[in-house]
Length: 298
Image (cartoon, rainbow, N blue to C red; front, side):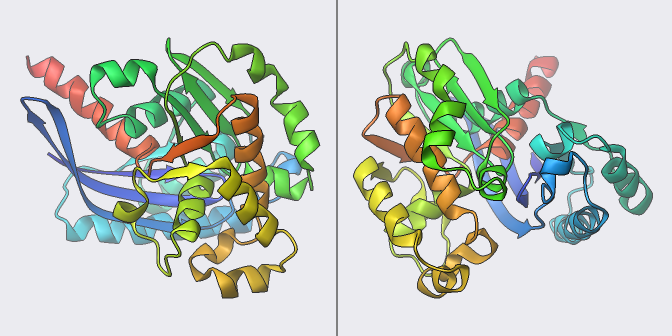
């Protein structure tokens, strides 16, 4: 069953085209195509409003994704998911109206808990049931950060790499922001991280010149290596970061803030390492939609 989904994030718009098939061991997800365009929808997030120019760029990016989807001969309209930037905006109708008018598409605005759940489902899709019960997942986005621990307990905080960078937050301020999560640290299991900060960090530490999903999937990163990477990037200008790590692209200005959040969470959760997952919210959403249809048929 070939499906397409688009994640309208605070920093980037992501596309996933995949085929889902039921097997004896579960559901197999074969990725046909992925794409990402940075539109920084959360720019000016401190004002509480989506900016017209960011909305225009976002709609253009989604239109280009729709052209790609048509080439795969997918008849159904893509699922459109919106997260932190849209759910926190005082004018989400600006984006909703533009998508309806120009593309005839409707967007589903996810709560923080829904975002956490779909991310968890995607990041743990290949784990055994026993391993999944002990897995913990953190997702650092542009506008929010989610953490799922066994239970499952779904937690979401309205701080991501874009917001932290715009507010020029120091690690100590980020620590204070997430301090309450230390009280939730009741489970011991493998910690997974997904989202642009985590996958970009893996790609940089692997010294990749271009991003590769297969290369970063399942890579285990030590907190000491992440700290060293952060310290190398911090004194560099945005231009210098792009020169040394071309794959950063438009993420170059927010990568240090994203790494600060990741490192703070590792300290709060008492972890010395984290396993990187390129599978996340889109994989999890398509998986859950597929399972619902299978259950309805059965």
